Image 1 (cartoon, rainbow, N blue to C red):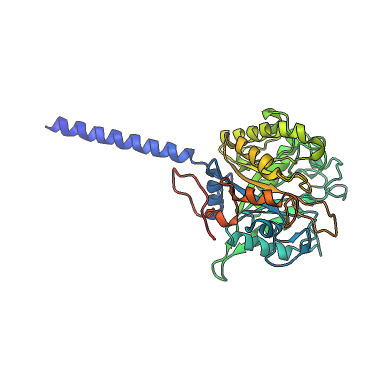
Image 2 (cartoon, rainbow, N blue to C red):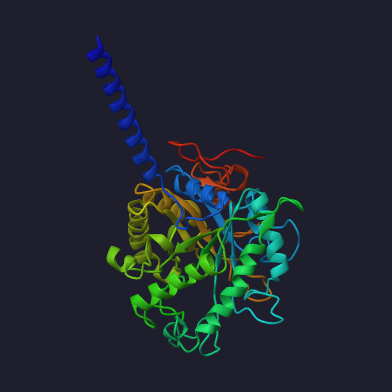
Length: 398
């Protein structure tokens, strides 16, 4: 009898060990944000975006709450909302051109105090805030499109390294100032930061023509490490977003590593004069990006795109939506962001989302109602930890 009891105990112990080992392996495979100290809500945002259902994509628009083609700084207005009846689910903002004494506005003349309010508003609507940074050339003093090589001089040990840390100091305070809640329970709002974007292009001073892959990687890593370790910023997910690339090797050439990136992105614009080759090429590029994101257990996103002035009346459903569907066969494209609608007094044809009466407005309404697309009225709770083994879909929240 005793040997039988002993055998049963050993068998139970074996099952328990196996279950524990399985549980450990499963836990290890659960994707985590690159920052091990990410806030609870930032971690939840990462996991929810990472687990978006294959047929769901959040729609985003740059500067959506700040201005539109025919208005500026009018509370509650949005060209997107006025066209389709719903706000975007993703809200894009820019941090350029350069922080400094008395600098109260960004590169698009948005006051930072207004930006803080709109970031909070977007978050409280259930949306996601994402930031790009068109930073001035810190070596020459020129703007972000001054392509004079600068990265090497801004790295640790470089002649102008202090200029970079000065900017990062101010940036860190801004990121940590994005808060919600009452007087005694303020919480830092999770955001996405897309530093040194479109590095495969030749129009920024951090482009691949102006620095080596190793210099770029060091530059990206230093930016993230400084914000995290020196400034204690832990409410940020980081996006890596090349522009045009040739193949997988080219996409990954300047990749700083899994410890520094949460989102694999792609910035790629549609252009009327190059439409045929773009339509042939873009689905492949999006699919490569999505496949690499899946391989590295990262979020996949179409981080910046659009067709200026949207002259094709069916562009939303016949081009953009089709490309999202194709790419999502590899991995769900968590979100897509189209660029800004410049106020009409500055440039009448510089807009990327429709407004009432615009040529593509009717098609945009159909696009917004497609099962794939998630606008603010259908956004799920992205800031609550998802249940294990579930994917994130859209909910209806009128």
